[in-house]
Image (cartoon, rainbow, N blue to C red; front, side):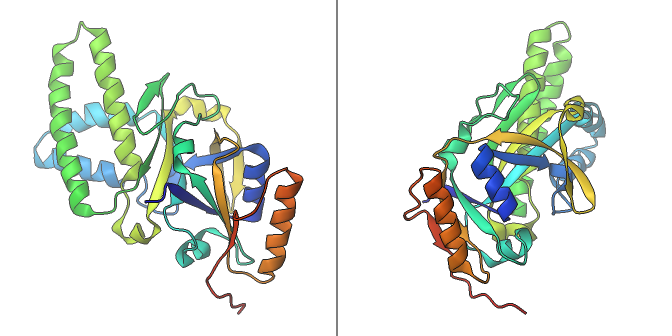
Length: 276
């Protein structure tokens, strides 16, 4: 199985990634899926209500995440996918950047000391990880039931350790990490074609005021920067467009001027282009 994940974007973003060696992570609440950030917690809350244990959700989960913000950037396991070109690239044509997933696992979010990999790490209120998104509702419900059972156990243990601050901190940290993972990776089943993989960064909300913003359409979004190594990019697809061969020549020239051999790196979309 390929370990390459694909990020669909426009020329400006591609140029920024190549020049600055960073990818921007955007606020999960402002993603294109309107259920982002609420799907997992909505299922979790309903499960606690069914067990008549709403107070655990209110005093534990809601309290823990009241001051938490989650940022992410999205990849797909599929290159040259028509719905991705249509949804995430401009009409004049876009680019699909193939990243070595194993390289991204070991990267740092700038300003964060976390050495992220698939094992969740926590330091100074920050969590970063890369995981596949989950679309299957039955699998989601199994996870929710298991999480609720574990949270009930932790709640009882937490209450019994009022004088043990170290253990209480460990419980809080582990709970924060597990919930961050599910919050970011539960996706509506109608988005399953995207086969999405996410790099996610969760942090204390007060930190947001220190971060830059950019304009996205008619709204402003804050972002974090994920640094990437020079050898993380393995291939780049040029999307369906006019003058696709000219764009290929332009990109090859850029790489050669950057002392990078573009041979076998630049690929053309096989999807027919029609300008209507």
